[in-house]
Image 1 (cartoon, rainbow, N blue to C red):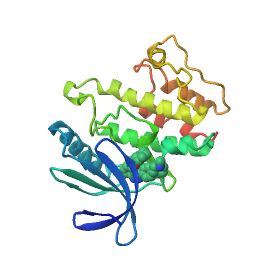
Image 2: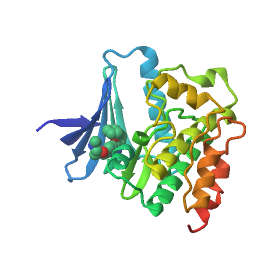
Image 3: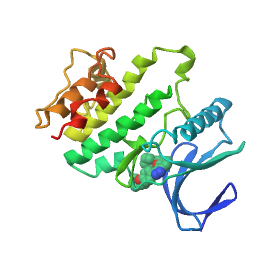
Length: 254
Ligand SMILES: CN1CCC(Oc2ccc(-c3[nH]nc4cccc(OCC5CCCCC5)c34)cc2)CC1
């Protein structure tokens, strides 16, 4: 059976968890039979900007360990000119798979996972990181709570916006919209524009302020208010992450 050595420690590959362009994620065991996830990135074909983006992501992930339990644990990493190994905490299931496998979501699970997502994104925002590509696959269920597994920095397609120093308060609202879409999915079992199959028509609907998003009535009025406040098209009018953390939905029983 294949093994991986990181900083002189040997790990036994159990299975591959996922694969991307030049990256693979393995489920591994150490000599004490402790379970880990190892992310391997092949840097042979990577250009300097890509390598830099991975180093940037690792530095932030390493630093943010201290600030929140809702950020995946990074135990160690090894970077050479040809590869990166990241030794990380292993979850049971990513949120995307979890959502696909179930028709309805238990209101308590939904509220708990929402709290975890808000805390994780609040943590990266407080350190000047805007994910801008949040989706269920960025979260993993570890012992019943959600953890953010990446910050959307590595291999970002569009160049880093910090150089243009856009108004970060407005850009942070983009992550609030994404979180709102995830919560919408956990509430109604579909994303806000899923019923529009034509991609162009879907894009027009997303940006068209006169296209109303449907919010079928539900018993949890606080949840309905959170959804309507996140899915406001004008970022200036959209609720902030701070306000979401103080919202009655998180503090009042259903
Ligand atoms: C379809 N099947 C997949 C395996 C398993 O789900 C996961 C288990 C562990 C994990 C994970 N833990 N720590 C992780 C640390 C980094 C990355 C991680 O995943 C990356 C990528 C894997 C594919 C799905 C999106 C996330 C990590 C993640 C999915 C069961 C469902």
